[in-house]
Image 1 (cartoon, rainbow, N blue to C red):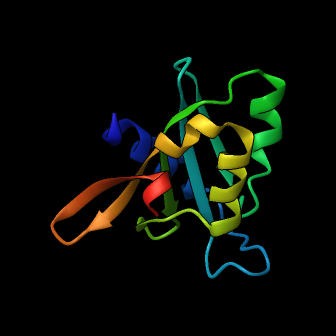
Image 2 (cartoon, one colour; image 1 turned 180 degrees about the vertical axis):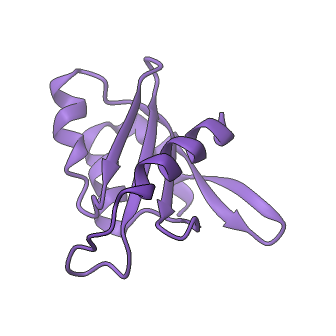
Length: 112
């Protein structure tokens, strides 16, 4: 699962060269929903993807991965995390993939 999400993010980042204002580099966030759908959003620091999730009635997110252009795994922005929580209260249990000391770890959104 994680390898697939990382691969998807890295493939999307290959062609991204434009860095929007406010970001040090392009980034991609990959979301896996309760319904089994995968969503990818680029440079989305405000949670704009939440409108699409709501439109598709697919609001419960099980896993989230944010990757920078250089391949670094990071925490999604604070506004992005707040948007996920506002979208669906069950998203407090969303597992965020994070870079740990010895590899990738997960933390629940509610604990961040």
